[in-house]
Every structure is written in structure tokens, then in C-alpha cells.
Amino acid sequence: MSPASQSPISRHVAVIGAGAAGLVAARELRREGHSVVVFERGNEVGGTWVYTPRVEPDPLGLDPNRPIIHTSLYSSLRTNLPREVMGYRDFPFVIRPGENRDPRRFPGHREVLLYLKDFAREFGIEEMVRFETEVVKVGILENGKWEVRSKKTTSFDNENNDTCNYDNEFVKTIEVECDEEIYDAVVICNGHYSEPRIADIPGVNLWPGKQIHSHSYRLPEPFTDQVVIVIGSSASAVDICRDIAGVAKEVHVASRSVADETYKKQPGYDNLWFHSMIDSAHEDGTVVFRNGKVVLADIILHCTGYKYHFPFLETKGIVTVDDNRLGPLYKQIFPPALAPWLSFIGIPWKIVPFFLFELQSKWVAGILSGRITLPSQEEMMDDVMAFYSTLEASGIPKRYTHLMGDSQFDYCNWLAIQCGCEEYEEWRKQMYYATSKNRIPRPETYRDEWDDHDLVLEAHEDFVKYTSKQSS
Image (tube, rainbow, N blue to C red; front, side, top):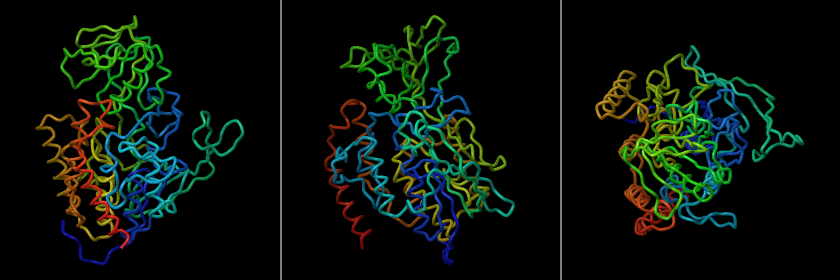
């Protein structure tokens, strides 16, 4: 996969979404000389980092016709990675002046949104974005070009018809314009935090309590004096169970990733217990865990992740989602049969997201300009099948195809080499590991107590280097 020798080619590229992935994709594409249009259904940049107190009318997100809320943020959310790790390489996530800014090393969600807005402003990205424009179809044409059909929407407060800022509880959306355009390439950056996955619980259809997915969790107060079961062991489950424990009568956390006999009370709490997974739910309101414990519960809260969902994408069956495996994708980005004209940024999870998005975007932009070459379609497909075989041989379920964890570092280094840029900094990698290690024994305090000060100093030395390069 050597750099190509011909003069760079400028393509007309559609980017779907103006969140953390879409913003850096737009920047890298334009840097490479492409003509870029970003489609964003909301009225501001930031994607899933745009908080709203509104939730969907279906608390489990099962109704395909429900109005979609595209953020899963809860009010108390703070980052679970330090700001030094999180930022794009040449626009570090440093403390910025201002009375409304959050100077903490693990800031709240609003600070991340402000950082993304700063990034968009710094690089003039907003001028490429069509706000309040929802993509309803992306389809391939016979000539290899892509049709993008979108609808311009405006949202109003139902009471006075003022243009809505998306914080109102009651909102109506009026479609005012439809459009069809042709693009050379489409880069999909629409995120994967809006289509909930629900745990399969025997007997739950007869269980009389309330169920909700964490996608619709915002505040703990509705759980006051309730007996709540939280399913999951992710970062959101760890945070939310403690959030709720401050007001609930009891909180019981069920996890698939622990031994069946697991049953322990959380130190520092008199109402928070950890269990193995739920075995069954019953008509009398009881829930039985695999450890044999029985709880009479009011609410089951699913912190069980999300499905990949691309309702607008039409590829004639070339790209599919099967048990949450989106594929086939070469290097988690390109469907071989449609490369390089269709690509996905931000599919992997359990990662340091923004920096990975940046490297993926650099690679896509360089390939579209002809500066970097892809292998043949057959070679890419062979690589995908070999990857799937490795997962299967390792006993990794299909639904974990896009889970990276430790493998993200080799992946990012591979991308960096293709792009001709610096590889993953050692401090960024070690800071990720230090935070993960610190989080386990100190889930309540790891965001405010740490001992990797030497890595912070290394990071800031690099930040000076990166920003001086940017300004020169």
C-alpha cells in the first residue's frame, strides 16, 4: 500500500454527521483538497456530545417509528478518559479560559462539546455543514457515483412556534425542503449511540415492572425510593448505578462478565449490590439472578449498548449488519466492493475515540485523492475474511467484531504508517492503561485522584510541539 505518484485528485465528498468523527473527517478531506459537504440533522456540531433533557417516548427504543433522540448523555456524565488522551493530535484538549469552562482533567460532557465547537471554529468546519438537514437515502448509482437524498427540517416549540434549541420537552419538526445530489464519495460518521440493544431476559414479557434503556436515562430523581436493577458492566453502568443509588431504595447490578456465584455489596453504600446475570423475571414482580438471589424490583435499566444502524444506506445487500457486525469492512473502514467511494469513520469501540477518528480520516482522505493506494478488492476481502477467522478461532462472538481495546494501538500505528504521520505516542497509550488500572479499585474517585503526573508532563511537551507545527 505505497503512496501513489500521480497528482492529487479532488473529489466531491458527502460526510454524514457533524459529531467528533464527522468534524475531523471534514477537516482532513478539505486539507487533502476535496470539496466537502457535511450533513447534520441537529442545529449544532457535536453529535452525541450535545446534551438534551428530552428522551424518546419509547423508553426501550424498540418502536421503529419513534422520534429519535440522537444523544445518550446523562446529566452527570464526566469523561472516563483524561483530556490529554482524548483530544485530536494537533488541537489538544487543554484547559481553556472562560467562566463557563470545566478545568477538571476528566471534565463533564459540556466541556467536550465546547472543545468540539472550538475545533470546528478553529478549522472553519461549520461553513461546510448543512444544519437541520437529515439524510434519508445514500444509494449507489450505475455510474459508480452516489446519490444523497436529504430533507431540510426546522424544529419548533409547540407552544409559540419559536425555532427550538432542542432543550424543550415538546418539539415538532416540519419538513420544509427535500434535495437530491450526486457525490463522488460518501463518508459515514453518524455514530452508534441511538439504537439500543436490549438484554434477553426469560419471562420479562410477563414481568409487571418498568423497563428503560440507558439511552433514555438523564437524571436519578425518577428512581427515588424504587428498587432498580441495572444490567451491564460498561462505563455507563458503573456511573449510572451509583448515580441512582443516591436516591433509590435499592440498586442491584447484573453483569454477564462475572461468575454465576457473584454477590457482593459495594463498599461505601448501604443499598448497592453486584450480582451475576439475571436468570429470569416473573409475573409477581420478582427477578431471579444466576446466583440464586431473588429481588422484588420496580425497574430494570438496560446499560447494554447499542446497535449499528444505517436506515438511510442502500447498498443492494453489499453492506449488512449481522449480530452487530457491520461488514464486510476492510480495516474497519471500507467495504471492499465499494472502496474507496463508501467509508465509515468511528465504527470501533472501547477505544480512544477522537485520535482514532483522526487517523482513519487522514487515511480515507489520502486514498480518495490518489496519494495513498488501496490493495485490490480481492486482497481486501481476503484480509477481512482472515480477520473474521481469527476472531472465530479466538472464541470472540460476532457482536464483538468492532471491539478493539488493546488492539487499537497497533491499528492506529498501522494507519499512521499508511498516512506517513507519527505513530501513537507512548504517553497516550500508557495514560490510557493507567486510567483503566486506576478505575477498577476507585470507580468513584479515579477521575479526581491519579498518579500519572509524569505522563501529563510528557503530553504537554508534545502539545507544545504539535501546536507550534500547526502555527508555523
